[in-house]
Structure formats: structure tokens, C-alpha cells
Length: 223
Image 1 (cartoon, one colour):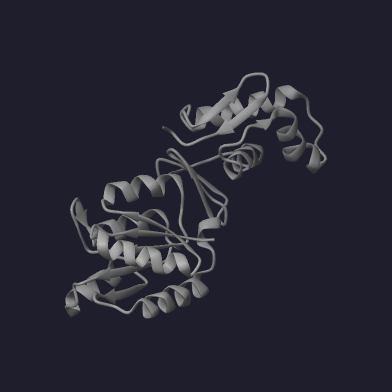
Image 2 (tube, helix red, strand yellow):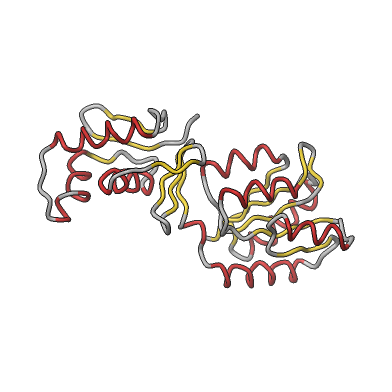
């Protein structure tokens, strides 16, 4: 199901959009505050974002720039009453892919979302995140607090496997098999311990990377 984040403080409009797009097969999460949306984005990347301009705790164009600075490919649409030419130009300059002025027809919004997604593809599958750690799978990059971290191939594969299975405990046996044995590199159990130790050091001992004693490891979002 296509995941959509909608940053909107008008509950009436938000409910209408959420209900309509939900009937069209979208999984819509509404955020009445920019801070809430920023927190959600740090833990899960949606397929597309809708942004209102005037929010209680900030401006939509500043939020749009923040999103674009971290995730360049996420489709973004402004959904706002601000219809002056200078506002529309500013919206696009902030990184938006489209600009829809209120009031709007739901069918038109749905069509624009669909058209944008056809051009961009499933961006959410490109990015994985947990706490302050994120992975850009297309670029094979690991970032900690938005800064790229240099990791070995084994460290990258270990982190990727854990991130792709966030919330699940992966046994040491499975990790050894998928990272080393499947590549024809038969190593002992200590290799995993050393690789994990080095990875944790590079990521500044992240609390979201858990050791499950006697079993293995698990990535889970910070509470």
C-alpha cells in the first residue's frame, strides 16, 4: 500500500483527504504539527508527502527544504490556500514537485499524486532509517545524523539486513549465513562479533541497535 504523509493542521480538510485517498488505496498519516512529521520521517520514509504552508509550529516551505536536504527523491506536493505567483514560485524553489491551491477537487489531487508517483517510482524503498541511522540503498550509503559514515562491505550488509527486518530479532546463525556463507566466505562466529563491534563504534553506539542475549540482534525505533 502506498504510504502518504499529510502535514495539515485543519482537521476537517485532513479528514476529508484522508478518507478519500484511503478509499483509493493510500495509507494516509496526518500530522497537525511539523515537529510530529519530522519525527515520523526519521523512522519511516513515505512514498509521497503533502504539505500545507501555514502550520502552527513553522512554515511549510522551510519544512520542504528540510525534507529535500535529507531525501532528495521523495515526491512533495504543496496543498495550500496561498495562490500568489511569488508563493507558488517559492514553493517550487523550496523543492516541491507540484503545487495545488485550496479549494481543490479531490479527483484532481488524486490524479496529480498518481502522475507524480508514476514519474518517481517507489522512493520509500530506497531509504531505510532507525533513530539517527539511515541507509540510502541506491547509493549504498550509511549516514549517522545526516553525515556519511565509511563502512566495510560486511558492515554495510549487516546493517542493511537488520534495517530491512526492523523490529525482528535476527539470529547469529542467520546473519552469518546470509552475509558470509552465501557469498562463499565461511567464517567463525567471532567474525560477526567483531564486525558488529566495529559497526557500533562507527555509529556511536546507537541505542536502536539491540543485542538479544543468546539469540542475535535487532533494530528497533527509539522509544
